[in-house]
Length: 288
Length: 83
Image (cartoon, rainbow over all chains, first blue to last red; front, side):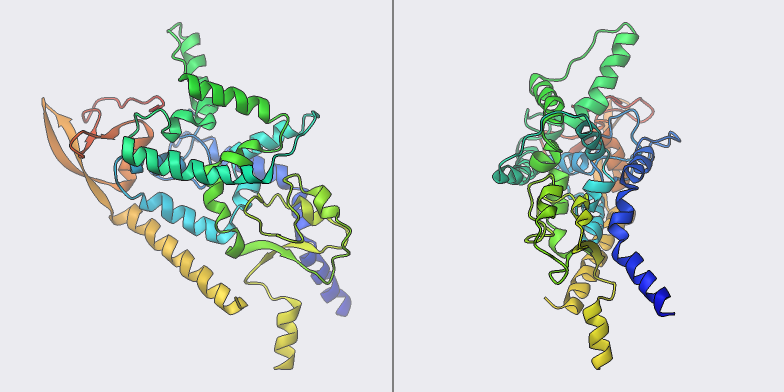
């Protein structure tokens, strides 16, 4: 019986490293869900991920696009904000690391062996500026016609909607409508950057990641650091490709919860939830 | 923050988010001016319809601050990327 309990405990403690082996498959499964395989076009509802609704293959509406459009109409987007608050408080940026198709695209590009460069830490705050300025303020004060209206500069929109549309126009023999110059420049910079920086969009500019990161410190699922198990080997620093020191800040604003750091030998970092009982809780119950 | 307090705050925020989502999905609506036979009629559109319309560039705010539909009922919406 004791062996069985020990086995169950071990399985529970290693859940992150077990999940990690499936990460690419989980991302692929969600990608299929977002790409509307049944042609349902459920655009009356938002998804919690960054995927342009103008994409010919989009099951749901993009929450950031909807927030920007509603801001331009001076309406409060209850559906989009309610969804993001609910999902954010449950998972935080776990959505970015495991569910988002745009993050998955960048992860795939990162598999190509090219030299990688790190970004200065302050660039992680740009995404909050993008959220406040291009998604909320500019649409509210200047409407959707402004050049810096978020959808007009979004690389996901350019890649997932404008490029397929241009290909369609070219195939049909119609004149090709190009995106505006700024959108084109951002798309080209993004396509170059994904081969030299790990997840550049998520780390620097993603407004959806900015929203989810605000929930990281108190979300129901979080990265648990067990100081008793830590041997201070700093392996987690090497495993983290986002320049975070997981033992100091396991639920950092810049973390996308890819859970790579949980590969560290002593099992000091693990995916935890506020609803599970820890060893401390068990001891407390015993003493009571 | 103790664990109990954290669970309380998380549950409260989940309820808050879910309530906001349900209000938007089932109860919220906005007045929209839709073109119909050379004139504009005011329609009450639920938020879910507005989301769909926004995703095809089918609604915008006019110079008087009213929300107007960019195509008449029965017509095809702009369809392509609104930007």
